[in-house]
Length: 152
Image (cartoon, rainbow, N blue to C red; front, top):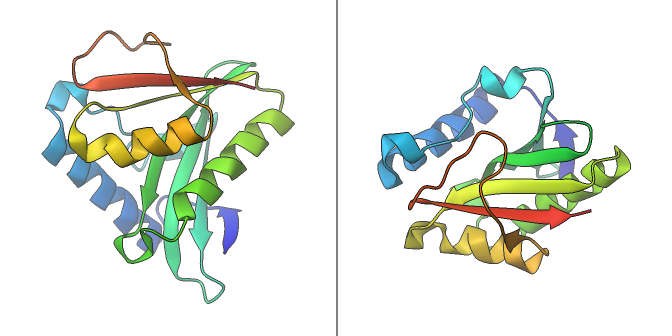
């Protein structure tokens, strides 16, 4: 597997992000969907990485949004359907954590859903040391959201 920074408008990446957005809107109420769109993933302070097979096949993506000089947020974590169960999300999450540490961040946080659909994501984050926390940044209490953080 190869991890590299990528452009959300690259055709296969765009397809994976749009699939992610569709799924978020299908599983959560509109006001509880906090996923970034394609243009938001190109904003200053946001870096998107993709995981690819050696032959270039897209396996997954994830982004890091810098909230301030010491705090970052995990965004756009998505594994392609064909790659699920192969450890792609764990490899990518470890990369994001390492990048955050290497660039001086002291805390990583994220928001994910409370529904059963998001249980695998919550387990993944917990396995990597994330613990539930109160809402951060501009988030507010929401029965459809779980907030998690990892001190670095």
